Amino acid sequence: MNESIKEVESLLNDVINDDYSLLNEAGKHILTSGGKRIRPYFVLLSGTFGSTNDQTLIKTATALEIIHMASLVHDDYIDNSAKRRGVNAVHEEWDAPVAIQTGHYFLAAALNLIADIDNERYHQYFADVILEVSYGEFAQLEDQYQTNVTFRKYLRRINRKTAILLEASCKLGGMSTGASDKHIYHLGRFGHFVGMSFQIIDDVLDYTSTEEQLGKPVGSDIRNGHVTLPLMVALSHDAHLKQLMTELHPDQTDQYFDQVIQSVRQYGIKESLEISATYSRKAHEHLLQLPETPARAKMMKLLTRLTQRTH
Amino acid sequence: MNESIKEVESLLNDVINDDYSLLNEAGKHILTSGGKRIRPYFVLLSGTFGSTNDQTLIKTATALEIIHMASLVHDDYIDNSAKRRGVNAVHEEWDAPVAIQTGHYFLAAALNLIADIDNERYHQYFADVILEVSYGEFAQLEDQYQTNVTFRKYLRRINRKTAILLEASCKLGGMSTGASDKHIYHLGRFGHFVGMSFQIIDDVLDYTSTEEQLGKPVGSDIRNGHVTLPLMVALSHDAHLKQLMTELHPDQTDQYFDQVIQSVRQYGIKESLEISATYSRKAHEHLLQLPETPARAKMMKLLTRLTQRTH
Image (spheres, rainbow over the protein chains, first blue to last red):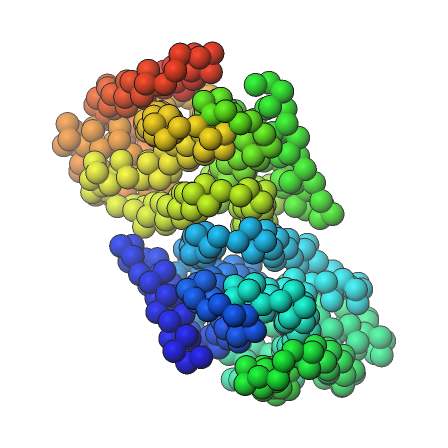
C-alpha cells in the first residue's frame, strides 16, 4: 500500500512538472498543501478486491486526486476563500485567471492520464461522475444565499460535492482490477455513505471548530451564503435564527454571523451528528458484505477516522 | 450535410437543457450567440472520407463545438472581454463564477458525450488535444504583457489556441468513420494549416477592422497584453513602436493604444497577411492529396472563406 501511494505521489508530480513555471508553481502549491490523499487510498484499497493489479489502479488513484484538487481550486475561488488548510488559495497567491486555468488544466491532465485504459464501462462511468460533479458545482452556485434549502436538496448537494467522488474512487478501484459486480456494488455504497457522513461532519466542524484548526474563519459556509445541515436543523428549533436569516447578505457584520454561529452551536449540532452517524453505520454494513481481508480492516479504520473526527 | 448539422444543433441543445435554470440560460446565451459551427463542419466533411457513418460522427462534431464554446467563455473572462460578437460575455451578463462553471460543465458534458465511443486511439488523441489546448491557455496567461515574444512562441501559441482544435476536428472526423491513415494524415494537416492561417487573419483584423465589425474594441489584443504577429512584425520596422512597448501596461490611455494601432497598421499588416497566405497554400496542398469529392470541394470553399476574410 505504501509503495503504491508513493507511485501515486510520483505520478502526481509528473503531471504538474512541465515547462511552464507558473503552472508548475501553482500545481506544486496545491499538491504540497497537505491533502490526505483519501481518494487514492480508497482506490488502492478497493483495488485489492479484484484479481489483477497493474498501472491502471495507480493511474485511477492519481486521476481522482487530481480531479479533487481541481475542484478545490475552483471552489475556493468561487467561495472567495482566501485560505485552505492555513495556506493561501491559488486565486489569492496568484489571481483568478491562474486559479481557473489551473483547475481546467488539472481536469484535462486527469482525463489524459486515464485515456489509454481500455475499458468502456470504466470510461462511461468516469465521464458520468465528472459531469455530475460539475453539475453539482453549478447547483451549489445557484443555491447560494437561498435560505429555504430542503433536506433533500442538501443531501443531493453533498452527494455531488463529496460522496460521488468517494463512491467513484471505490467503484473504479474495483473496476480497475476486475472485482466482481457484487463487490463493486458494495464498495460503491461504502464510498457513498462514508462521503455523506464525512461531509456532514465537515459542515458541523465549520460551526464548532476554531479558526486555527479549520485554517479559515469559523462559519465560512454561511459567510459565503451556503446553508448546510447544522443551520437547517437549528432553523427548525430557533425562531430568532429564522428571523436572522431574512437579513442574510454577503456584507453582514461579524456580530451578525456570531449570533448565527451561536444559535447553530446550540440547536443544530447534536441532530446533525446523529444523521452523520446513520450514514457511517450504513457504510459499515456494506463493508461487512466484503470478504474479511487486511484491506477491509484498513477501510474500517478509515471509516472511523473520517466520520468520527473532531477537528 | 445540412441534415447532419441539424442533428448537431439538436444535440447541442440537449446538452444544455436541464433542471438548472442558470446553466440553461448561460448555455443558451452562448449557443445562440452566432457561432459559425466551423468545427462541426470540419468533422462532418472529414467524416465523408471514411466508409462508416453513424452517430459517432455527430457526437464528435457536437463535442468539439462544445469544447470550443467552453474555451471561449473562459478566454473572455480571463481577457476581461465584455463582448463577444456584439453580445455580452457570460461573465458580464452574469458573473465570473457562472462563467467558470459554465466552461467547466461544458468540458465535462463534451467528454460525457463521446465516452461511449469504443475506439482507444480516438480517445487517447482526444485527451491529448484537450490537454494541449488547456496547456496553451496557461501559456497565453503567462505570456500576457510579455513584449519580447519570439516568432516560434507565437506560432506555438496560435497552434494551441486555434489550429489544434481544427486539426482535431478533421482527424477525429476521419477516425470516426474509419478513413485510411493516409487520409487522416492529410485531413489533419489541412485542419492545422487552415487554423494557423485563420488565426493570423484574426490577429490582423484585430488591428485593421472596426469596432462595429469586431463586436469589441479595435486593438483588444494589445489592450489585454497579448502581443500578436502584426505587432511583432511592426516592432521590427518601427523604432518608435519599440519605445512605446516599454510603457505597455493594463491602464494605458486610449491615446497610447491609438499610437500602437497606427504603427501596426502601417508596418505590420502586409507581411502578416503573406505569412497567413503561406499557411493557407499549405492547407490547399494537403487538400489536393485527398480524393476529389463534393466534400473536398466544400472544404476548398471553406478554406477560401476562412483565410481570405476581410472582417
